[in-house]
Image: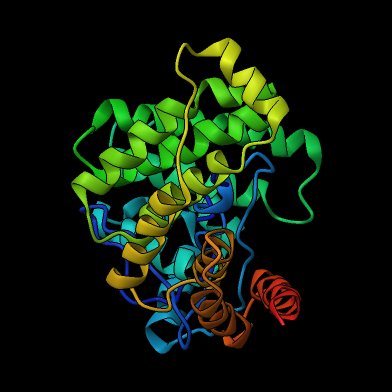
Length: 305
């Protein structure tokens, strides 16, 4: 079901202490994006790949301040969050995780949801071993759960709870993953309600809808055993969320462009499928995921003739 994400998206706005999520697009500092957010909810546990950011002058100063733990401990909450959000925007995954790990016992949701996100981002790094990947996945979920308990009015706590809950399902099996699907959707809907302009939440929910529309027969049988009314969706519903994500943040994520093309293909609208798949193909390939999107878009365009 969707899987977050959470991967490319150019730095349009640094996350604020209020929980506004950083979005990266094309010509700026790259972070781990939705990759972790977005595809995070798919049965395959998809992830967004890191980009290679450049250090700005301001970023350079922040980066070096982070290096001294003695200094970090002396910083005020706002400064720590600002540094954390900068490191996230630059895809400094391990450094961000080590910074936030110092606040793992915090009761502040702003630290906890960021730590949940950082934990899963580290788990998705190519060099992370399976044992550590699993440990980080469950740790991330615990941080997300605590964040939600501390502040259920913050859209980011709902979003990352949904993403991390889906991640846990990747380790506990398809029955658990499908069993959590309604809960995942509820929290994504709450995140969108609290922040209708968060493109990543919209994309993830669109992917959830697309995934359940194309759910394999054997997974449908599992769902039928678990639920009296198994989760269902339509291509039209998925399309609505993908288009809304594009509306609030145009060209924010190559995978959203690809999914628009695939959804229109499934709906037999060749003209619009060609339009969006061409956009996906032409999206600047800053990350490995962008390159994978480019390849899939090219292959699908060939099929469309």
